[in-house]
Image (cartoon, rainbow, N blue to C red):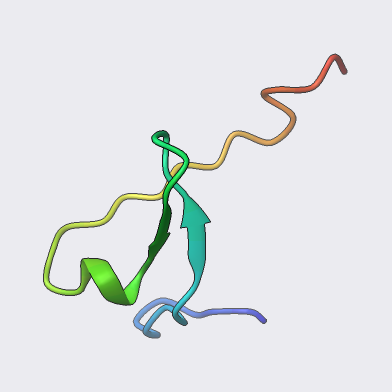
Length: 44
């Protein structure tokens, strides 16, 4: 799925640093920042 600037993000689930499942909808109304670090945890 490709998003464009201004599109709403679809709901999704990720595990937190506390190993708990968190959905985007659970954080509704809060500031959310996603950071992606491709291959940051790989030996490559």
